[in-house]
Image (cartoon, rainbow, N blue to C red; front, side, top):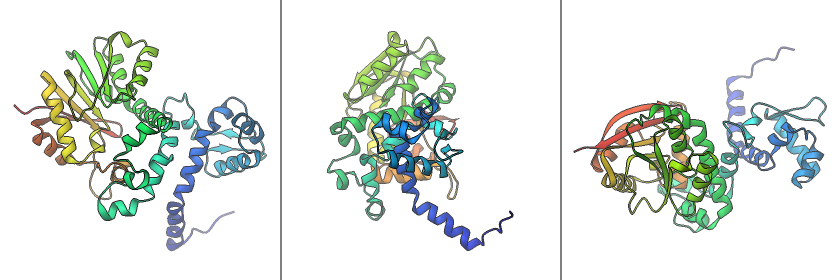
Length: 342
């Protein structure tokens, strides 16, 4: 049967309805991730009853969840009783090469979810909403008090790093680098990818005390612990000496003054001839599609930070006594390298 195309105003209505109810989809995806639908279906537990038994969920609610997942293209079903995961759902498998399971859980958990409820206030005031939602100075203080959410967030950063790590490692030249430190590097996925590319490279992670154990465990599991260093501290105070600093998804968390402070600390401790690599999204011109503008809104509401254009990075470098020497591309990320200006 041939369907008559919807008139333009009706198409806009449908599109806007999808935008308004987008948060419903977010929580459906969160439940699919939390209750491991992708893993259970891949292992052969293909009915609501089977999954409900494994996850201790309500069987009828689980059936309704699976039906909704089918409408979203996450699963298929011939009879409405047995379900099969799609390639889209496979991105929520725990062991998938490009898994987004932990990212799906952490972004829709209270730490992020509740501040986003105050998004209009963030736009009105220009201030993040973590304090209003949680009573904490920043999201990192919140995570220090909510260990389980902190775990999901750390793993979510690993999700994003694993997907891009090989591309970033291929862009960054580490020949002749003695020690490369991932500043705020969480579980160390990026720095370990760089170490696999360059077997001579010694690498490490510098992060908060409650974060760094994950990096130690990951390096040991990967067989890289012999040339891997884990250091705990606060990059606003100082950073350990190294030949190369990598700051992935760090500067976008902070306002300009805080970014300059971080970069100055890196410049102070940087070995002679060393450099700093900032890995972040680059904001393009207005109406340019992509993740960067939405991530910029996430930074507004969650941290008070921002995504930046290249001229804004150059201004930060200049104030910190650095100069940009090259810009590379690694998937959705820009790899912006800087060195001391004098």
